[in-house]
Image (cartoon, rainbow, N blue to C red; front, top):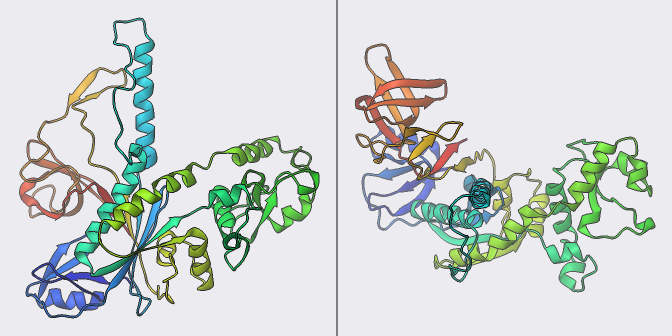
Length: 427
């Protein structure tokens, strides 16, 4: 199972420990909780001469979710795992909405300045905000884990999908045409593109085959835009029929398949665009950085019969992957929410101002988004509450708990568990 991260009183990272040992340290008052997410203990004495086992931080970057794992190369044990959900697509939608509003204002017959173009220069290595947020999220967690664990090396999945190989399957070169990894890139991409289900009947959790939408016998190519996934039954039934003849009684499904086949590889493009920017960020840590491909990741995971998941993919990244021990691993689920907006006035559905946001975010040391524990000893609200708070200038807070919303809890009864850091956590 995932171990508990441990640091000494001088904040030197030590070997992660078993949860039973962590409970014993807390019971004997030899350590205290330093951080809830990721769960970390701090000892009340220093251990400058203690020998620690160096861990490897492994990262599987994704467009929506990135897998993270800490692996002991000597034993193969996965001591920590996490799945980091990005907000890149939400940022993209917000920027699109803002752009549409600005264009609509300029299109009206009103007094408004003309748009100014080419009045800003972009720095070298500039990325769109939706892409930069993915790199920044991973960078933040690399720095967090380096502070809490003895990390000595990093492994990154650098090429998730080989776009050149998928577009031209006849490309020359022994690294593409020979060896046990041949075809893994294309299969992994198609599994994600078609949601791991048969394109013709929608069945899931069965062996799927790569199928030509336009049969090769009738001029179809091996291009990625002409490939889909099919169960064995549908593949045999379709044979060499034209897809329009095969699905002539199901026009809705036919249109869906044709549009999905032409759909641009936005997820693959997001990963491929940020891969070298992320590699540059990881290189600046000064640690040795190993890279691997998505095909190698899937090969490692398949060889060890490890179920598909983001954190398991991370643990299987790179040539250095040992025989993994994943028994009892429960990943920490992390969702990037950002730090709110700078909007100073809320509007109603008609666009008129209805509520102003306070200028100062902190109230009696608390801010909206903090995770607190509140113990109310008497009164109507008597009880114990744990959850995220929404602060009020009056000092009476609302707490979102697992059982519902608790309103009107005084700040005097609240104690910090985890301060707001722009992320939401779960198991």
